[in-house]
Image (cartoon, rainbow, N blue to C red):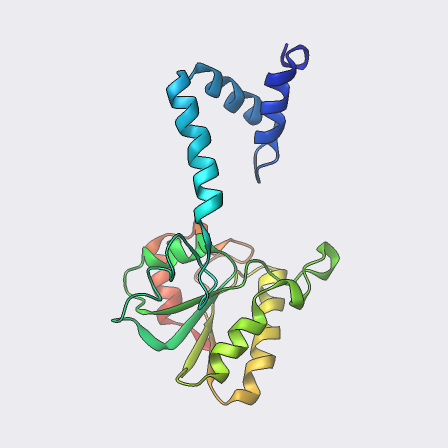
Length: 199
C-alpha cells in the first residue's frame, strides 16, 4: 500500500536512512507520524531541525553539545589529568551512568576500519594528541570496544601516545568480546574501569 502513496513512501525512506532501522520499522514510524496531530507533527519536525541547528562538537573533547562547552568540560570539579577515549557520544552517556568516573572524555567519532573508509584522518585522533601535548594529562584510558576495530584503534592510539610519556591504559573487559560498550550495564562498566590495564 505504501508504495502507492508517494509522500508516505518518501517519509518511510527517510526513517530508513537512520542507523539500525529496517524497512518494516521505517514504515511503522511513518504511520506513527501520520497518527500524530498537526501540532505534534510540527513539534516533531521542529525538534529535528532544532537539534541539527544547535548541536555541535565540543571544541575540547569533541562530544556533542548545544552549549559552548559540553557539560563535562564545563564542570570544574572533573579531573583534567585523566582522559577516557571513546568511539562515540553514546558511550559517554553509558560511562556517565557509572557515576564513579570523574575524569574527562575524548570522542573519536568512529573506529579505525580501513576497509570501510575509516582511516586515522577521519577520526578525532589529532585533537586528542593536541590535548595531551598541551600538558597536564597523566593518563589516557582507551575505552573502545573489544571487537577487531576497537582493538585496532586502541593499539594505534597507544602507539601514538607512548612517546609522550604518559600512562596509557585499556578497560579490563568483563565485557564480552565483540560487545559494544554502550550496551554494557553500570556494574560491568565500573568493574572494567577499576580493572583497566596498561597498553
